[in-house]
Amino acid sequence: MKRARRPRQDPKRVAGDKQGSLPVRAAAPPLSILLVEDNPADARLVSELLGPTETAGRLSAVSDGEAAMEFLRRTGRYSEAARPDVVLLDLNLPVKNGLEVLAEIKGDPELKRIPVVILTGSSRQEDIARAYELHANCYIIKPANIDDFARVAKSLNDFWSKIAQLPEDSPNGR
Image (cartoon, rainbow, N blue to C red):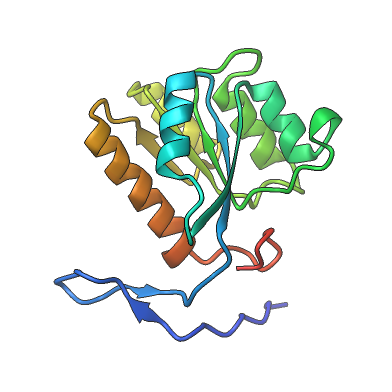
């Protein structure tokens, strides 16, 4: 049985695209992001770059893999947490590493449709391959340069908030 597709909103165009514009959704509710990052400096930087704007609304952060799963499952101290639209996941985490978290998310029927973006310092081909085997939606190596990091953060926000179509039952009903 085929699922009825939700009618597309009137597309706008991405400014500055010289090859022809990409369709983008009309204004959507601000994006809700869960950042799973144990490095306080990286977490602070991402928080500053993706802090509240018209498209990036709520950014929640946890510092280990076990806390990430509690947050996503809304258990323990996170029982009132809202489920995020997107997860930004580091691989090198204490308690439970990022690949273990990714496997749990994608193996859980309630969580598996949440897009997971790997945002890590690891450029190991084994990590990249394993992340995609576990159904990561994308793998990004953290840039060392702050200007490059800012561009990556803006691109992530623009893609997930303006271009990607998220499931209707995501927290913000995209």
